[in-house]
Image (cartoon, rainbow, N blue to C red; front, side, top):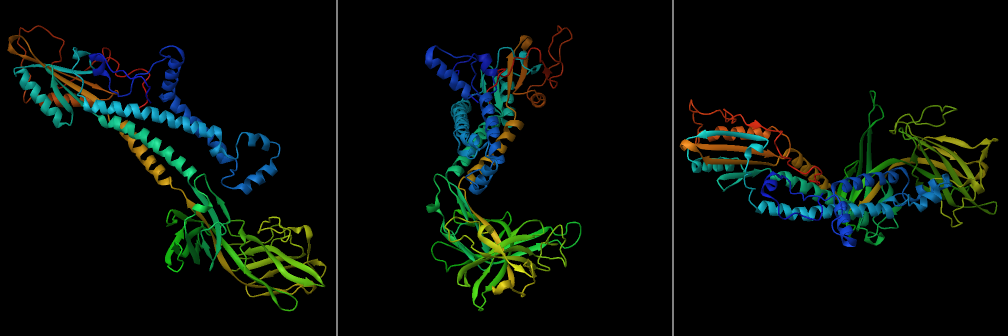
Length: 579
């Protein structure tokens, strides 16, 4: 991260030894009064430590959203949770824990993180552009203070040695230029590019999530084989929108469920494990439902129609039931979805016959509840009750018990379609016992007390779908991928500088000095300097030292760069701003 006050003039030595485009950071407010405190506050907000704190707070703030039911995802589940936890519900409501992602405190953290990232990216990008346009810093006066250093004498002219060094450095893709009797070269700008790319990608990732939360919506729908769906509010079982995506913004399309394929493991240790779930559909886009296109929807392989995606969420069985009154008139015929309760698809459900008519001069309604078993055992355990042995339809059976009275559907109060309200219902009796029956497909049950008959005609499969519209997903995914790429670049690319100086000395010989400086402690800069020294021997070979030459501290072998950690200046501030 950067702060707001940039240093525009730096001493030559300091500029040469700084290997980052991040501006320096002040430790205390600059200036006096309100303006000074505002500048200090801005520097703190755009610093690395505050950004890390905000990221940490954002991750902590998301935890309640995953532990506590959210109104935007499942309002019914929220109501159920509130009913079960009445003591803490008022406190949770004040803290907005049922709407975490739209709460004031979560939005505040989110917005502050946006501002912090923007305050880093904008000034740092401009400064990096300035670095790219500028030439590498000139060589320091004393190259022996650099962490890696090599030197030798040669008979070649200084101009010849410098020209060869510049040519070799450019061949190694260094930015090199000749200035003041020395070649200054720099390489590794992709490190800073990676840093900026990481910050920009993180900004795009957060922007994608924000866009998705403001302009996304999703709804659920259960469709039985042979049925269809049109993407309208009246067809959806549930719907959760957002500020900029409401029921009026639903994409115009629909589909028909022609069939469903469910395949399970039949042998081995994983018997009963799902191997294939495929919904075979024909869909249309726009207002013309006659132009159908074949499609298939599988788990994690949604069908994309326009700006929406249709996901396959679950599946089960829907027994086809026919109810007749005492005169033989059909008063009910439909495929009723039963909901799975275990891995073997033991399913429970209810049948509500609201239009049965009258019996003994009184209006009567019938209700049935029970189990659908795809693979039923021959006998039920008294303790376990009806249970399926396998999720596939190897031996389907329907277990029902019946009720008569008032279902409560005419009261106007909302009801769960998968539950019976037994308040005004009386359970049917047969021979002094609760009326209960187990039916195979095609079998008929003569209802007690002259209520008619119920026939288990067969069964169909159903599938549940989620229709999702999330425009920010692609932006968030792209940001995540680019953030990883930028992080890799910032970690594995090293920013480094090399200087070569050639100075004419006594007796007509030239002293060639090489020095290197890297952003971090790494052997790579020493290897590069050694390779450069070896290559320079072709144009500026090391001269033999005369026998009467005084002893020097310079290295005898120019290919062995000397590491000088004790004398090396620091390459970056101790409190380095965020890359």
